[in-house]
Image 1 (cartoon, helix red, strand yellow):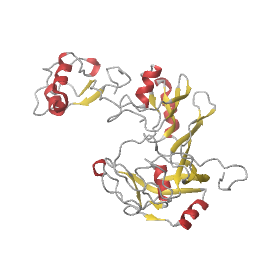
Image 2: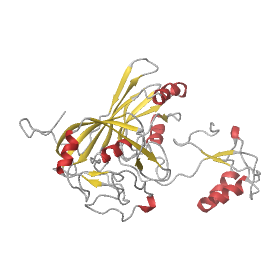
Image 3: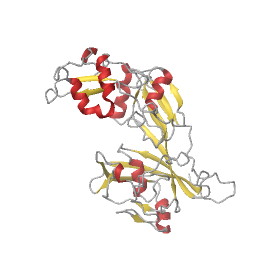
Image 4: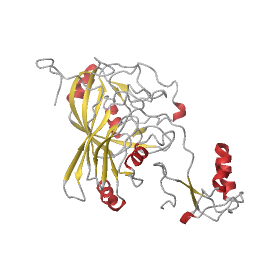
Length: 366
């Protein structure tokens, strides 16, 4: 259902479904019941100035009765946001697609406390295109290649590629091979467990210990996990609405990833000297947090991951410790030109193993 109100400052108008009957005489009464505790005066003002509209852009009045409209649209007040101090880079821009390198910590789409500080709203304002829509999503914590449709007339052609799984993606990740920040190396995420609610994230993490339902690999087991690569890892995953984490379940696999080892060595980043491993990951399905779960299930959880293999206590963003997961590339046959294309991130993971000097320890693997 198309909004009768245009995008404003990069943000869509809010759509609200109104009950056809109830204890409220007017649409305004219903909105005051729902949201009056947030901004009573602002709601009344919107009706007085014609800022609340129905289908066709018809303005509602204070006296518009309940049941006169099933859906209404209005602009909500935007929260005061702290600027995310990283800028997206444009890798490609034409009449059909906009491709960017999304930095860590920047959400793909607006929501919660991030509205203007989202890739979609930033880019709508930056390139002056209110029709911009993301073709897929990256977690806020994940950096890398992200595609947007710039043209409603050709959007469906690109959406079909995703629906038919005719898109190939590669990621890179870095995992710690030693105890770091209270987390033991080689923690294997178990089957079952809790998804975790945001309000429960306090005091549940026990430094140096495996989380509930998890187990620990010893040094030999960790080495074996690396020696077994490359491998195609499969498991069964699910995500419960309202829970932060995806869960591993017993049963027929519904998630699959190719895991390849790129190298092992000392970190060159914030954890300088920490022994780490770097991986190339190729998902063959698209479950929520799939790559993060798959590495955690192998005992190779991604460095700086607050969710897996154990849910950590809630803490403010630490810009010096981004999740070490990067969407490196995306490839497909362009449905407009008919030519194969690949878009590749120019970013690098900050905790990647330091390059080895010629003749130095032979730790890196290709």
